[in-house]
Length: 429
Image 1 (cartoon, helix red, strand yellow):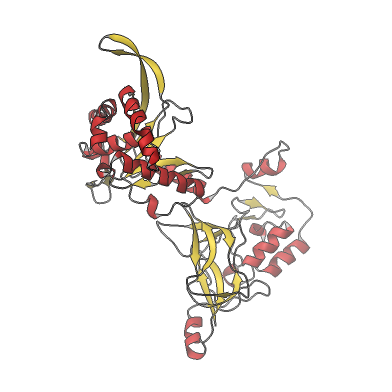
Image 2 (cartoon, rainbow, N blue to C red):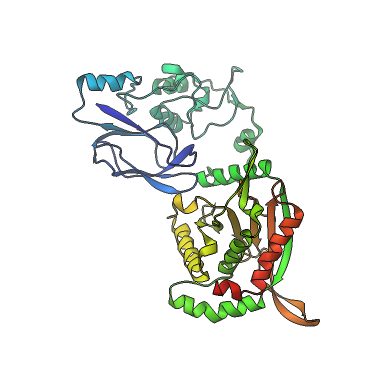
């Protein structure tokens, strides 16, 4: 019998993924647990293993295409399941047959309200007859492929299959009978895209970029942002860092200022519990976390990722430095896992190495705050009533003002600054 394996939700409310690379093809034998395809989700790039032994009868989605959770991913021919057992499986779904579609056997049909994604769908478009159709269509994979190859906007095609699904023949008939009159686009952005003669590049958003956009809006809509700016003189911290950096390097770790900031932040959170909490508005509770997991925002070519250093309050500066090096390398090579990015209670973002001094960091919702680290610079400072050249670190602390009041926010930042100004306790801890 044929078994349809659908794209599973591999964690944290995943909605869709992009096909990066297929590891199997039609007619290939596959074993349980063998990698079928590499998918890019909103957080990681991961391999999807086969749920059964069998022969690949069909794969769905080309490299670069989006597959939604619950959509068919592969069809596997399984030997040894026949008769009544096969009938039971078949009765749980509805068969869809289309020559060349690779959808032969048992495949669940979405109901009338279901929507499948398409690479060029997303706007309301008016046809030459004045009819306006939704830009989302229910269609078989082969119909989408044919539409793409023929330049047909699948949103305008009326489907003849089950639940109005667009079939390959529907695309062919539409292309054959299409009027020569050009389409009129009701969307300004689409009209500009097709009509504007100025040079431009249109690139589909990655899953990571979509998630970053969604999370930023969620944070801005659900948290009352307040940002406090400060500067701390860190000449003593710089002296200690230079003293120990060769020892750290010999042990395989690069000693950076960030390691000290992470340690100082974790210890300060233990004294100001509101900054290590979140709101449970649904049940009317405050959740104060008694573990201190610091997320560090890492800039990559694909976008921002936030691996989490767990129990940072209990780690030494050396152990934190090792974690920073490990996560930086994994982020650079795309090897971060969902486990690496779970469970953060507070986030630190460092933009100073790029050149920024102050910023207004966006809270990693539902956390209570995020600390931004700016560019360190030499500046004139007053020490014991004398003017001197100091090394100054700018800090930008954004908090959810619903959770942390102004006074508590200032005291929390002052505590971090005190640790950084006198860092001996951080090294000895």
